[in-house]
Amino acid sequence: MRIWAVANQKGGVGKTTTAVTLAGLLSQQGHRVLLVDMDPHGSMTSYMGYDPEGDGSSLYSLFHGGSGPVDEMIRKTQCKMISIFTASTALATLDRQLGTQDGKGLVIARGLAQVNDDYDYALLDCPPTLGVLMVNALAACHYLIVPVQSEFLALKGLERMMRTISMMNHARMQPIPYLIVPTLFDRRTRASGQALDNMKERYPETLWNGIIPVDTQFREASRAGRPVSLLSPRSRGSLAYDELLQDLLVFDLPGSRAKTG
Image 1 (tube, rainbow, N blue to C red):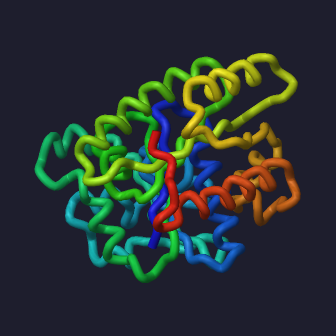
Image 2: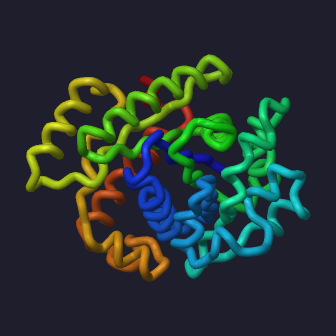
């Protein structure tokens, strides 16, 4: 199983949309996909029709010893090839509860190891803050996708994310390969163009050469609880993510020259 984390230290940049859409595209290729909602807001959980404030096993259970085998905590979705490890709003308390306990940065890696043979890909939807959840995601992933909204304020979140990646690289045996993905790009606005030019200038080696456009079909897909690639496969957004996936599948091949900054 390949593990991709989707992270940025700013909210509203398209992390959940990116994870869900890539999951839909992978499933259409016949891959078994596990979505992992690591954000206490539970946007991905809600997207897939579950309540992050509801009862039942969730990722929070895993951090507290679990309530059974990991495969029994995972839930089905409307999409046959996609399952989800749901979030709980209680995840917001983990940093206070766990503090600096040894081994708590590897909970996700160890949990996913239990279902390694059950899925081809796991996509981790990370919270926008640096804490035990993001550390777990970055420790577990084979590849990191960094969505960045094409606007000035989002570039500040990207700067924080780059510092976090540098910090994690000191703790890992190997650097984290990653790709910066411009999202919510609006060709009608000068601000989007300027933000994209800024990213090209500052991160030429790790910036994806495409863009994810603004597309109302993302909202419709969220309302339907399905990836946009399944609901509206010929939409601009779906086609853009399909291009992204083809590049990711090349970048994440063993022995490939992955982008590490």
